[in-house]
Length: 107
Length: 352
Image (cartoon, rainbow over the protein chains, first blue to last red):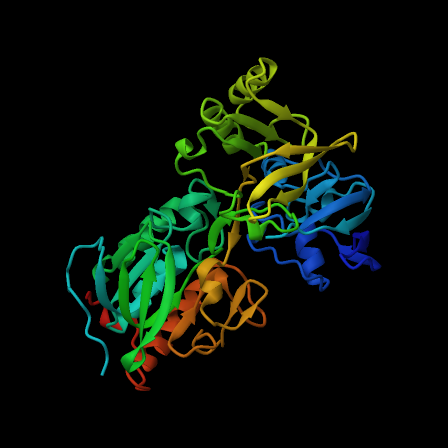
C-alpha cells in the first residue's frame, strides 16, 4: 500500500507524525478530519470557507488552482505559504511526505 | 388539531403573512425534495431562501458542474437536478418566499411556529424544517481586536449607498473584485480614500486593477499594497478614528479614518439560525437520526446543515433525511399519530 507521511502541527502547537494511505483520492482536509483534527470544512471541499487552511512548511506539492488562489486571496491574513487542505490530493505529494501547520481561517 | 393548509392552489410566490403545514428554510435540493416527502403525507409546504432562485448551492455555486452520486443518474448537471426536483414537487404546489433571509423563530399557541424574514414576511407553520445547507454567506471579518465594538460606528462590511461616504475619510481593505470596484466608486465621493491590500498584486479584473493603479499614480487615492490591517483606534465617544496598518517592511502607519470597509469576500455562516436555541455542534445543528428533529420539538434539520454520528454531507443523505423527517413532522403536527406508509408505485402521487 502506498502511503504519505505527514508531520502536522495543530493550532495548540502539538506536533504529530501521521501516515495516510494514498490511492483513495482523499484530500488533505479529509485525511486530517479523519485523523480527528477539528476541521470544520463547512463548505465540504469546494474552496469556499477556508476552515481547512494549512500553512505549508515543507514538502513538494501540486500548485494551487485558480479557484484555490481566489479563495486564499480574499482572506485578510493570507500569506504565501497558505494552502487549502481540501484542494490538495494526498497523491499530489510528490515525495510522499510533507510538514504542515493547521491555520484555519476564522469564519 | 393540525393547522389548516392555507391557500390551496394560491399564488406560488407569496409575500406577506401566510399559514402552512410546514415551513422549509432553504430551497436547495434537500429542501425541495422535502416538499415531495411532506406532500406524500398531505402536508403542504412553504419554502424560504435567502437566494432569489431555487437550488441553493447547486444554482449559485456549481450549476454547470456534473454530480455523479445521484442514484439512477450516472451524471447529472447540478442545474438539471434542480429542474427535475421542481418538476417532481410541482404536484404539491409549494409556495416560495425567495430572496428572503429568515430572521426570527417564535413558538406560538398549539405547538405552532411563527417564522419571520428580514423584510417582515411571516409564516405560521405547524412545523419548521431547516434545510439551510451551508447557511448564509456573511462578510468575512478581519481578525482585529475591538472590531465588533466599532461595527456601525465606522466599521461596515456593505456599501449600500456610496453617497453616505461623501466627504469622509475612508479606508477600504481587500484585493478582490469588490474591493477594486468600490474603490473606483468611492474615489470621487470620499474626501480621502485609501485601499489597503495584503498582497503586492490584485487578482481581480485586470482593467479595474489598472484603473486603481492609475488613480493612485495620479494621487487621487492612496494605494497601500503588501500591507495588512494591524489594529483600530477609537475616539472618546467610541467611534472609529484611525486604522493602523503594517507594511511589508514592518513599518506601522496610522491612517486617520471615519470609515473602515473590510471587503474580504463572503463566508458561510449559520446566521440568525444560530440564535434559535437549537443544540449545535461546531456550526451544525444536532439532530436525532429517527426523525431528524433538533433539540427543540417541532423543529427539524436536514441536509448539510445538520450533524449526527456518521453524518455524510451528501445530497443523497439529505434525501433520506427528508423522508424520515416528513414522518416525524407528521407525528408532531398530528399529536403523535403515525402516518400510514405507502409506496408511490402502489398509490401514485396525489397532488395537493
